[in-house]
Length: 154
Image (tube, rainbow, N blue to C red):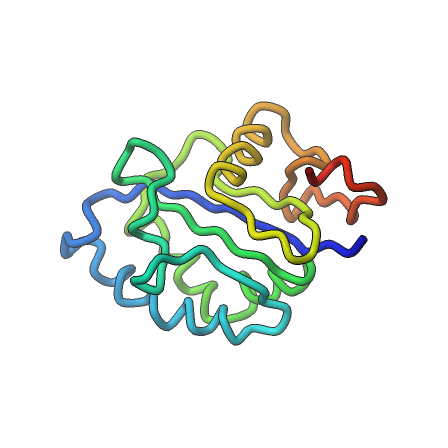
């Protein structure tokens, strides 16, 4: 079986999306999403009819926003995240988001063609927060290879 890499990333805004404090972040959503859509190895990203995921609920907290995407490989996601204009947004994140006391992103392998849900991503992230890196969910710095059986991804 072939696999792709899924990722989830959450963040808690310091103000509502329509607040001027967040305007710079909101203005970059379209260009960064377009960059992702064209990036080598990109497969899919969570989005509503608005074209982004800021109006998709992760939890009951309206200040928590979620980002999910699927990539052909760890290398493809890493290249986009750290070697494209995305890095500028990443470096400025403290302007718009509260500092988190727990990990806010994780990665996991999914069968090619599977589209992960927010509930699935939440489960993977909560698992990472409780257990650290495992084949079930991990980080860039603590990677696991693609599974050799189907049980780990299910």
